[in-house]
Length: 292
Image (cartoon, rainbow, N blue to C red; front, top):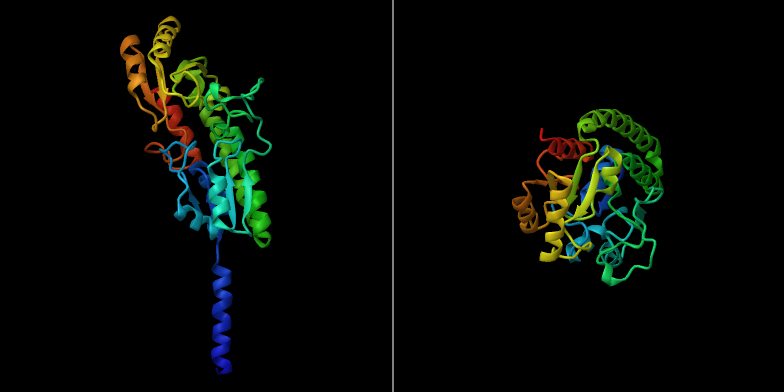
């Protein structure tokens, strides 16, 4: 091979290396959205769970293992919500993979004060894992992802830090806007299908009075539905909030007996039209609750 061809091959090799992006796989679309904002043009990001699907249960597919086998970074929710990710990560046989637990440093709500057993349903021993639904935790998630990106791609650390700071600025601006949207929701009492919303309720002054599920992960029973109907009547609750991946049969029964409205709320990015990224997710939820 001539020196000219060798030089061309070397240049092409350098170009390929320079254009290579950090491959990130996330458990959920919420983590994907934040990772995209921190990584910018330097990363590609895929989520294993879809926005309108239940994040508690994802099938272990060979195609998911293949995706993770090619990844540099895996971002998980943690707190046992996505324990399904463990066999996918193990099955990928990717010894160079860096795994980031995005729950690190999050002030966790709902930690059980007693020993957890199967009779309690799908109670998470480490606490409620739906922490991304408090936008104040979005920056903590971003910082955890930032640390992971710097670990796998230290050469671009400064760019990732700048992207993180830009995200923090946007988030701060949106928090002011969201507080305005939530002003008329202060003190609103709701019933939710699953215990997905304590972080959101805590952030925006909403009160969750009960759950359609008798216990987390347990299908509604006639006796429990009757109890919720009485609760809704007594408290004059106007909204029964349900995630898009649960059956609306029991919520509609409660609504029919009480006059309350069934409201579908997206708990994740992509779970409803307009909830296209982490910031617009909260726009969508708040506007839906306010009836806008």
